[in-house]
Length: 205
Image (cartoon, rainbow, N blue to C red; front, side, top):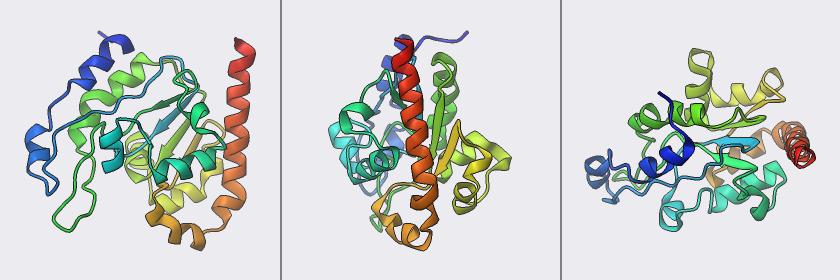
């Protein structure tokens, strides 16, 4: 039996499935699920996992990656954090931690396996889905997912409802410089679709 988002949110917030896993990481932190969902949000941002700053603040994309993502979308912070407009469904709700080299660990698969489909069932089908990074693309596209650059380059095959995006991490600045077509062609199309989807929402109210 499917559950409502009102039922799911406190369950996700209280999830401690990865307590031992996170304690064993180089960061040695405790779980802190960051949940930001709205049942009727028009846009779904399917991301990777919170970083260290988001782990501290409890607000998704509250970092430089979020600044870049909002620039791509053409949204202000207040507009992005309107739960009636945007939901954030990462592949892991918690910061996965660092390894001994100080690099981010991948999102534990148990998180998406436990919660992802339940959330997708509880929310209304979004008008626009942003698949941010390879982990989200592999989950949503399954066997059809290829390398991130190929998925993003082929964005027209999935638009206007789905936009595969690279991760907005500042570590990908080099990728953006090597692929100027992304900001020249995909970003304007994405901003136009975001604007259209949110305008439709206002008209409906």
